[in-house]
Amino acid sequence: MKFIQIFLLIIIAIGLVALALQKLWVPKVVAYILSREASPTMAVPRQQPIVLTDGRQCYTYSHDATAAAPYTVQEVLDITIVGTTVTGTKSGTQSGPDMTNGYSGTFVGTLAGNTITGVFSYTVDGAKNKEQEIYRTTLTGLEKLRYPLVEKEGILVPDQTQSPTPLLYARVECGGSG
Image (cartoon, helix red, strand yellow):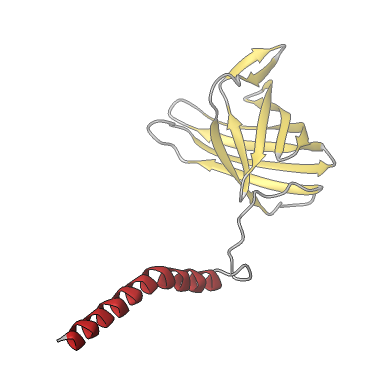
């Protein structure tokens, strides 16, 4: 009888040791296997916004008419960067329930980090105007930060006390010479 009690105690002790090892050892083995599968050589690189470099770059924006924004818009921004100076052209068309027109003009600005701030001087339906614009880089192009505009000293400027609406401009091949 004593032999059976000792035998049962040994079986219970082995069971407890096995349970303890399972709780401690199995998670470490699983963690090791997972860390080997996600080794740095196999890790997916974190995507970064595009880097604006010297040279010519083109971007396009398009927006189909919706109930909330009833104008279809197509734009092309063609810029050249030299150091921190940005120059170029921007042209587009917009059509909606009460008007259809095209516009074009020049863009002159500065580059600071991943942000371009500049002035778009344009003509639309024979009228000339100027508007300050702010763009920042994204993973695939530029994002125009469209704020409500206020007029200051003959130029429309973003009211940065308000929240902007981002407009995504995709980077595209530049057409023609330039």
